[in-house]
Length: 139
Image (cartoon, rainbow, N blue to C red; front, side, top):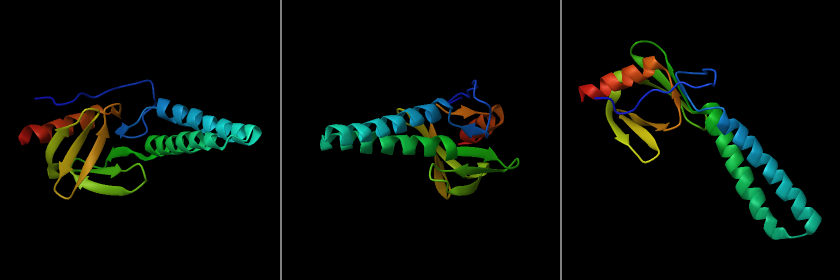
């Protein structure tokens, strides 16, 4: 049984699983909006606009980190490397996959010694897709 499907896109592959480039561009837009709010705050002296600086700037940085860091790379037939949005890296075995939980906007792989969060919008290689589906089918 196939739980989720692989996606191919116009974005050049950076790993076996990665987030699309539109997140990078949207994060740059949000950071530009934060700068605009900052300038508007000092020009108009309306300090409430600082909320826009904090929201847009914070979301922009968080999106950039997700786009840049959140990846999965297959190391060999048995292992893969997962990198979180903060850049923390962990190596897991495909055989460690215990459960796949489908959320509204993402998937969570529960492993023997951790978990892996997979956004619904990711691009995933056929190889990774097939390996995950094979392990989930065994359970």
